[in-house]
Length: 417
Image (cartoon, rainbow, N blue to C red; front, top):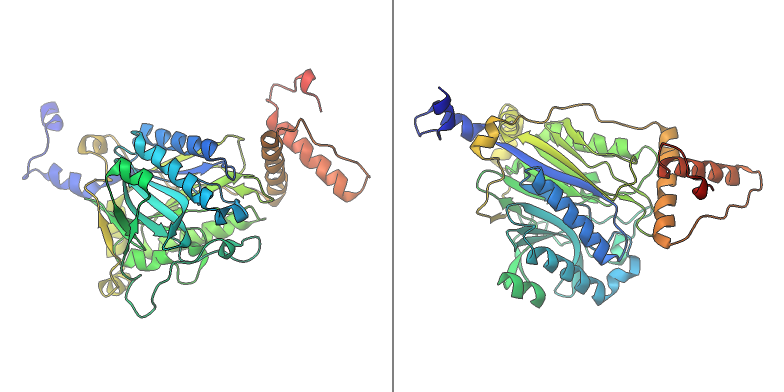
């Protein structure tokens, strides 16, 4: 009996059918505490997240929006050097063994035909799979993406998201990979066992979000790399959108975000998470921890996705006539090997965790203060106290910062405020 369990299943074995249909995949998303224009530090944090994902046995890793440069580079996005340094960082990833055996989704700016785009660049086994530009840019409230980037144009008369174009890789990447061009446009990665595609931040919030067409065309895993700042109770909106997307269309949805202050006035509140068919199966922190890299791993069942979708007949009727999204094929499987599937189980769903409004008010600004203090090289803050609401509220936030930054064993007398 034990020998039968160990031997590979044959074509006639029932176990062979189960190994095909179980389809467990281990995937990673992350919160990264990036810093605008800190190319070396940003690269180190990206590398750390990939190493941690690989150590956990993941076959896919997604990261925040514009993680290579940092989100808040502002007018530096208009400088050619910013784009050049971004490609140098990507080349460093390709020159190492980090992308061996893991599909990586990296956020960075890319110029194509003299037009700058906010992009996801997909890597696998030291090669570039393709470039996916952002379709819907955030350009209200605190966001000014259309000052720096252009939305990828989609002809409304063409089915799906239009044909792919060819992107000519810069020399530093050509010399490493031997590739001259790669596809650029809206596409799905067709692995040997599933299809995976991408949304970027604001696209999730739009009425005709890309995940609708992608899921109807059979894409089972969607990754969203975001640069979403903290706003009181905004996390509830994100959760409602991801829950609704996966509850209605089925599928796996991975959300990544920056966490912390990256040099500007905004604080990004993390909360990387994974959802399957309307249920949260993994969630990172929103504010807790002053760490720079937090990887969130989920084991998901693609069989559950297929069963969920097939049992929703109205959805299947729409999918049968849905426009086709271009595929970029890779000779790579995202599901776990058969032996690993025998000793693995899907991550259990649990209700998403939400802070109270008062906790958000204390944790968000105090986290911003800590990042700005340590990265500016200052020794502390000078706080004039007038006794009014503004100065006393700021003092309370500094106290909250001190309580988080100093070890729980108590403050060092030499570090007293």
